Length: 212
Image (cartoon, rainbow, N blue to C red; front, side, top):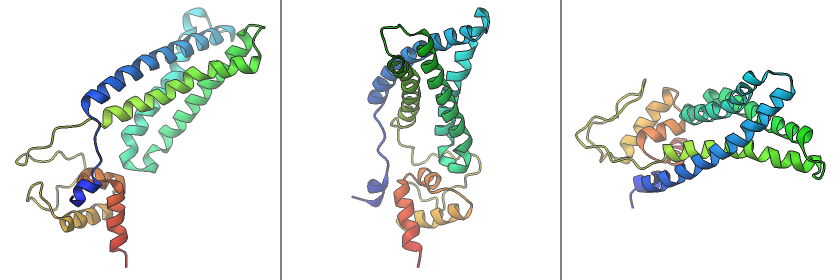
């Protein structure tokens, strides 16, 4: 087994990801609808007109969706790029959970304890948060067809071409040299790993071995 085989990240087969995404979308829609109706009613009770109350849950739960997508999209850039979407994600989830819990307390049936009603009502926004993140992760790990040997590799903005042009059969030393060059340019280990198609732990091991 080659080092590339040991370090490469196994991708999720398309049919597995497709089935999982379909299920997560259905769950997310159910969670969003329950949270939406609860927050809409809460907004109405807070004095927002009925014709405008539906915008409140879209703002609150919309933050969860957009922030989750942003976190996953910016993850290869490192923590400095993701701290703001993570902050929005935490704030949005906190607002949604709190709003659903408050609504459960003010609108719960007397036969059910307030803390129990609040706990039950907090489930939909938490599920929405978890399912949204899971869906995005699954769709980014779908198996892609291997690139053609004679086709140029796809480079994102600011990426330099590989250190050698010998094709896919690049040696370990060549990849280490390029990893060191990319690190000098300020790339994170995760971004280097994605560019070289190895696991981030492999990149970290290369740098540890290079340290005297």
